[in-house]
Length: 189
Image (spheres, rainbow, N blue to C red):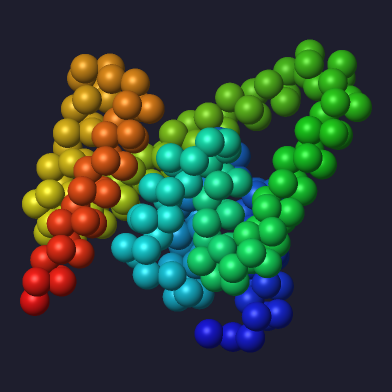
């Protein structure tokens, strides 16, 4: 890996760029973080990225910021997390400040309204892409337990309308139990 200053500079510019040009919420930025840091820079393994996304989802706050924090921390410790936070927050802060100044003009503008409606379709496609890529990663791992947990979580959320908080808590407990069992097995060897 490159020296820490270069990593921090690339991290800042990458998260600033992703935050500035990502519309549709945290799940959209997650797939772009994966493409940048896993596929392009090869700084993080795909399985690690899935773990980091799980941590970001289970932490309170916006998933885009949480995702940037965990990726930044993984790459460069506290300095990386702080760099990612600042870079991720600058674009929405600037955009919201600008919108606040011109709110009256934006509120009734038909063109802006139609642009935002069109962006919704793109956001749906990007979210579907994230679901497919993350699900494919779990299936490719060929871990029966992971596939079962993924399927059970999907069924609980979509069929039985179980609150996502309960699903996340259950997955935390299952993940903790699996890790403890794995550690005990390794100690016996």
